Figure 1 (cartoon, rainbow, N blue to C red):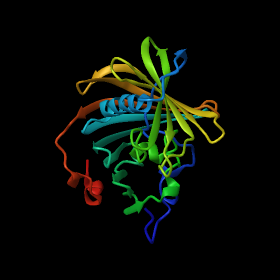
Figure 2: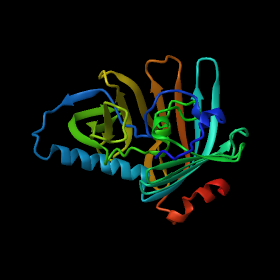
Figure 3: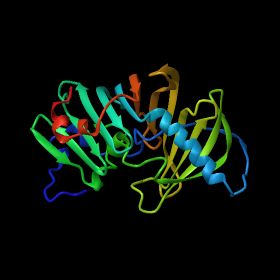
Length: 274
């Protein structure tokens, strides 16, 4: 992923304020507070858990999508909102365009396979992100660059274990542990997710570091029908070790399974998309 000449994007743009990492989301949210813990036989458990995670992932992703979102960054002394448009095709292609505030308008992120690019219109530069920057904060938020473009796949890059059942906000849910596979582009030691049984809603995700300590929690709420699907339209990321900090992502509009081709996700189009 590293090109011979890489321009440190943090010198030119607020996208690269140091932080934490996670969704890669926007990774994926799910739910908490186990009520019943059932030990399942090992045979078939991983397959069943993987199927559940796959269904939840497909529901939020679709074959392709177009979305409008607003991200609210909350800090003890200030708050900031960022508006954006996003397009995706499968797991290999995604493009995010910043539409507000004015100082960041026109900036864009592009993912093509394993390559991640950032367009900086204020200096007329295209920057290729090295792997070392994927865990850094995106625009000073509690989401990372990896969350943003979903370099890590919750289906492909993890082994899944069904731990038992839980109830969250009235939803009967699966509690699933996700352990990263060797060499996967994942920074977490493990992730525990909670997915509703009826609609495969992603309601909570708990992120653990190498010390097996939970350091971040992402929660999905405001369940509404949007784009013909019932999904959480509010995703809130909370870094547990940093009091007073959180980032909220609000989905305002989503269209799933749109007509879009790989040609849309080009460096040239990243510079002119609106």
